[in-house]
Amino acid sequence: MRPWPIVLGLLLLAGLSFGALAAGKKAADLRQAQGLTPFIPPAKFLAGNFVAEEMNPVFIFGTVKDFAASRKCATAWLIDNDAKERADKAREYTLYLEEDCPDKVVYYVFMDQSNLTPQQWIEWRRRFHKSKTDPQYGATKAKLEHALQDGYGVSGELRFLQKDGELMNKSPEEYLRADLQFVPIYDLNQQKKISK
Image 1: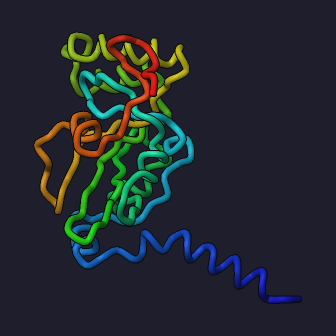
Image 2: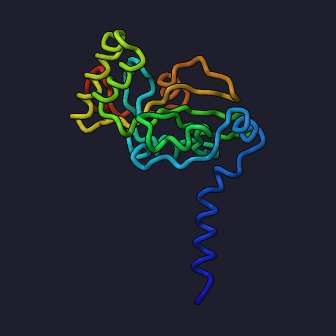
Image 3: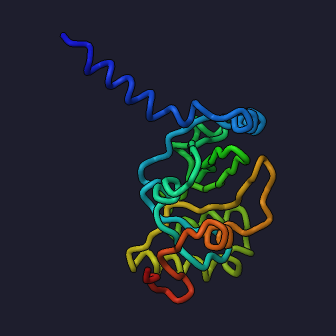
């Protein structure tokens, strides 16, 4: 038996995980300080669209996978050490897309909601926000349901951003559009696809 197919397979696997293992010193220090570990997100989450505001999103952006691929520096997906074991059973959980640049480390902090419909999403919110849920999230639920009927379902939410371990003051939605020039695909307020 020839060992080359096995050796090539091992090299391919090592190459796929290299980004998660080859973090720069600043990124490695931040991972340790925040208790984060490499993680492979579910394909359903990566293939789904996302919003970038929790309470009143205006836009749906493209797939999480496309956003991650659009980053200019090395990226890796991370999860809290304690949450890793519970992730497959959780309704939603936090994932960190780490972008490790020479001058900064940015964490795009996502909620994986790929197992929730808009109705389940608002029911989950009701557990935490009680009587404030419908006034705060009711309009968003209706907009997300309409977008889903139009073929623009959402599997994740970009909740906040960190730069070098500090929370950024700018809203994720504004940061994506203004700073990163990442174009949304659907306008929730106008309830229609955005032409390119």
